[in-house]
Image (cartoon, rainbow, N blue to C red):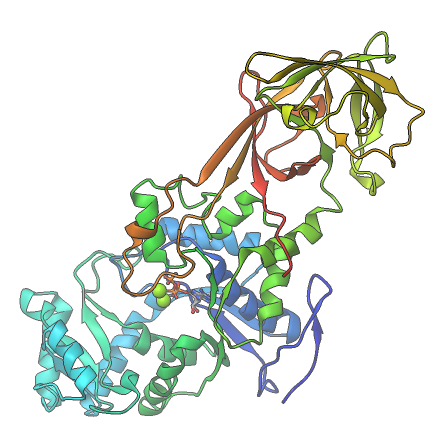
Length: 530
Ligand code: ATP
Ligand code: MG
Ligand code: MG
């Protein structure tokens, strides 16, 4: 076993290797343009990219597996190209399975002529039952001539042609059910987004993938482990058509708790308007998680670390967000926000007679993050949640200012504190206080209205099973909004900026502040390492 350890772009080492790499490495990422890329696809794409571009000096192909015109759209193709670029993946070449429709058709004719495939019009359910029970189709012994005439009919997309498909003649009752005469061509009169109405028949993935891999010079085909049963079938196709061999390398499918990773189901949520779109921050799409505040280096590190594992895991999101925190914490500027709900107006005695400001580092441990303006005043605001814990004459700390002593607390009939008087005590030791609170001067600066949005998972169940009905497990309450005011510097932040609000957490700015429109921030989970 080869054990070279390569350094990734992040400088980390991953212990993953391919066999038989002496004659070069050509990998491919073959998405179907039927949806936006999700984090599972990111794993497939990053592994292919890693082997082709970091570990070996090879070639990465991006191949659109566009063999089902009913699902595919230009919009999805464009989004896939963009998202790969966002992830720092640069395919050396972009191809389409549809580039090979002529050759694939010729292979289909050839395999029928050889007696290794036949036309079948067995009804779908019956076919599935027969395959399950290991029974032959009634059409299994059709002559090549008869099968070819049905293929002709299929090619025209006639009602008669639509009834038929072509199946590889591999086995009736092989214990590996993937070998039980899989369908290799089917009829579909839908217009294809690239080839238009030229074709009415399309190869299946099982047929097209090995042939195109072989034709394009792919040396290593990476597939998720659930395809393992289909490896002998892949091999059979290449052997039967006497084509150049391709080495298959299996990797584990990536799943996350309470998360859908099926384009079909994600499409459903987009189409029914349950989410804002493919880039919804609750979505596991590349766009969704980026909008939530995931950084690309963290995504790459998390995925490549899982690389060699073949065990299918249902990851907790905590782990990947903890990886992300490692990247954002050292560079996220610190700001302050106070929630509007039951804000406490506070007078500071012994403080400045008039508001004044100072330039302070935006990050206490990283000067490179720059400076911000901090305004001090005798009129400040505090949060109810903090103030209600204050005891009379207690010494507390106003963060990034100094200590103060609680002097006067005014409470209304509802039991809410409305007004507070603090006496500044700058000689006090900030290390000795128990309560350190956030505050904002409400004069001497234009506070910026903000909305802080947090999200919950879209599903109420950790792992949806095959026969679970999606609608039964949709979380009804997944969006939580708080309004607040933030320090004046927040007005200058730009969309996509990642910051930390003191004592609140990490946030990504989704919509920058504009007069009359609050800045909208999305909470970035800080994760946990269990
Ligand atoms: P989906 O179920 O989301 O439609 P798919 O496998 O049908 O996924 P493709 O566009 O065919 O979608 O996938 C492109 C590549 O991404 C394939 O190589 C596939 O194995 C891989 N892939 C898809 N989902 C995952 C996942 N959850 N974990 C790892 N790899 C995945
Ligand atoms: Mg697929
Ligand atoms: Mg799928």
